[in-house]
Image (cartoon, rainbow, N blue to C red; front, side, top):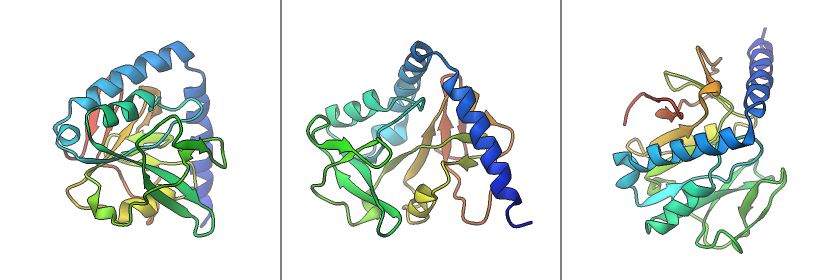
Length: 196
């Protein structure tokens, strides 16, 4: 019985990634641009000074324009780097997207190093990756639990937001006790929020 949620998650993850992969690259780029504009107009983002984001890979929402926008508007950009020793994410301030990043373990661009953010409570806005989402904030990640562990310690008034394509929205995400929901999801066709 204990592995049943895991099997449901694995099946859903595979199905949604296949659905996302099937989107033409030009469509993903156009939808990513729409989502980036929507997020950029949110009061929670406009007011944020310290923003945690991530560098996209594969068929994910393309974060390139978003992270460049964070830097261009004078906000502090924080990006994660996988720490395999403690099975978690280390957070670093990034000021240079060209020379400040390198390919990590799965080919995802990560900070080379630099100034580590030790105080998680400094984060004002958190862009969270994921595979599938439900309107009530349910989030299915890639299975490592890295962001669930990270979100446990977020400041209550800091917004944890996911950017996703509408094909990633599902009726219900199978959640377990250690799964942390996001505060909202923005897609190219709508916004699904628990709170802003």
